[in-house]
Image (cartoon, rainbow over all chains, first blue to last red):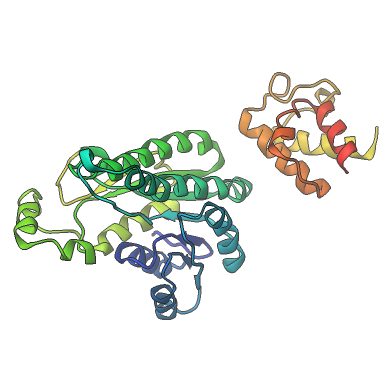
Length: 245
Length: 77
């Protein structure tokens, strides 16, 4: 089940906790992986850990030209591109009353617009091979909203609508497009939250714990597989029951 | 019929699974040959590959029929 041998996957934000686990999971299922991110050092470390079939393709997702060139670079390194995981994302949290245009625009540019460019750039090779998997990492807050994250929630809700429309256009070509929406996940970012905030969050999660990056990666590996061929335009929520939607 | 027209016709027949005799000069990909809008993009991709040319998006939009395709490729190749 979920064998990805012979498939080539590009993972953005692979220098982060969740992105790194996604790359590990896809690689463990047999896929070659292109690891993208802005910080080269953690990417090279991960590539060394994975060994054969792992390639480093750094990219600054605020640079539109670099974004458009990324799928070609990844495809050249791996000899093809079958799976695109748009995992990279940034936050610039602020209450909306104080949110600057720059805080709004930078989050939309990186989270939504760069995803759009990457989804567009992979269409041609995927249409030709009549097989493709787009997996966009959105967020629970794209569906529920979150105070202080108007920009982030808008970008993540935008990804969901974009994915659904794209999935409809491309469905007849053997290409699926889905989202994975993590709830609260143990990462470097959530570890920094004050204890009372963490306790408050845990109280709102029926399973009473944060999720792990590996649990997000497992959902991605499923959606990337042949076994998920009839699943498209969906958002798979991985949140310990925090929101049932 | 020119060599280019033959090659274009072969691509259209294969891609759209239509009878060869339906692929005539004025045959519209969408109205006469049952293509959807994604098919027309794929036909242009196939033409680019077959003839080693690049067809920019604004030009691609003008290629609506078999005749349009042969004319464009003849001028570009």
